[in-house]
Image 1 (spheres, rainbow, N blue to C red):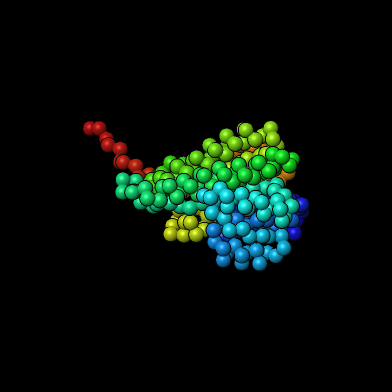
Image 2: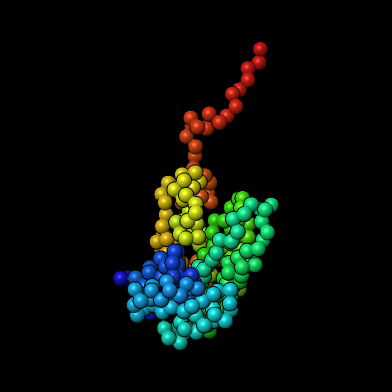
Length: 265
């Protein structure tokens, strides 16, 4: 166990599984006490039992401001404070083509992915601003950076998280609160289990390595630590270079796709 977060208290929304669980586990390894805030009561209680005394579970739907406040109250009242907030909870929304989408899932997607992040930032920052500052990390997606087909509500929500985070970072800097985003991509979790992540990596990611939730957790740990004391308002992709550009095509494949030049008589 390390000591990078020793003496600090964190909340991780959506912390019972996937990326959130990896963050919780990494924080505990570094000495933090953590509130797991999640709608999945069974998984949240099981994780708290597995990790023991440093972890408490609070049932939390992030679209409900009062439930988010209850998670903050638990952190402060039972664990002794709140120094780190990770707004990780999110949903994928509709996968229908844009012209076929009835937008039935739009309101819930925005409520969880945007309002949930906004209220999580606000309720955490209210405490942090009065108690020496703190760190907020919001989980967005490369879907909020790169344009593409499908999942329009999800893409819109994740783009909103980026602009929201930068704006909050500007306002809260003078109160000692740092706010950043992490944009993961192509990481196998429940939210994207229907996609062949290995095939996507081969087609879209310069680094031909399939990432894991632990990779995201390491990035969150860095931004939450004193090593990043001068960093606020950034978006950090954990994407194997995807936002930089696709991997180069082999020359034979590239040439095979070009039209044959015509010759003039």
